[in-house]
Image (tube, rainbow, N blue to C red; front, side, top):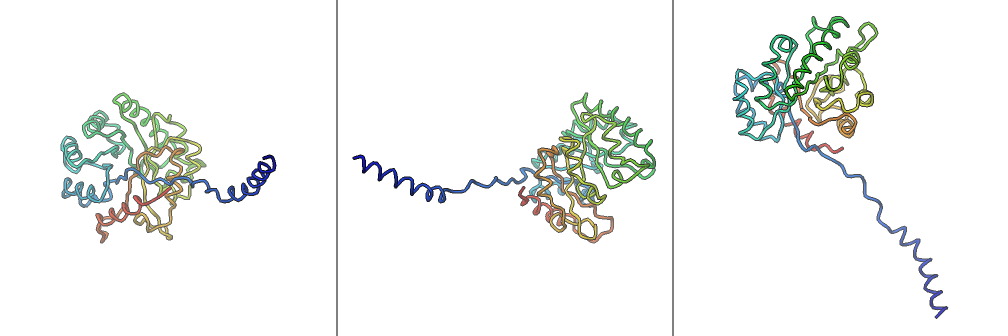
Length: 283
């Protein structure tokens, strides 16, 4: 019996390395895809200008679940809300400019609440509004004031960048000034991934310095010559950017293409191309 037990033990020892080598490797980390893909309606503004409900219906048919407004195209906020509800769409955010923030803030907030927005986003600055750092300081003051009103109403405020905020103005990047002179609770950022790349700035460095401050993003692609193209037709590594969503705070992802007026392009087809690429991204 003792010899038999010894032989069994020796057999177990000799087999165990083989068993170990045949053990299945640990599973690779599971890749994710976006649960919801949105679109900034500026992309299809030519169609929105003539037929809002049908354009929204076509975008829903493509697969978009969220939309971001840049004007209501002569429709009331109540009508817009009805169109969205009928199609099962949501509109987490809307764009505005400085003048309404100064002159009719209450109306902006009321409209946002009717439509169901969560964020009011400053779309950008006109050239005459961004000539000096003092201009940006004044904007930071207005942002803080308007954001207080938004928060009191249960809304949030965000700033949408272009490339000019990342330039050098008297030795300072205007975006750095805006981030420094506003509290995260007062100003979050809708980061435009095309424009920050176009400016030569590093989005990851901003994610690291201001974690969680980027709940919204614009998803636009860039060709080798720097021109804007449909998502998937350029070279921006969106998988790497989306993989940093826990750091950046990304929650809403909006496809956009700034087609110029007069471009011979089917904007709905462009929207469909970008949706196809974004919806298949793994990160």
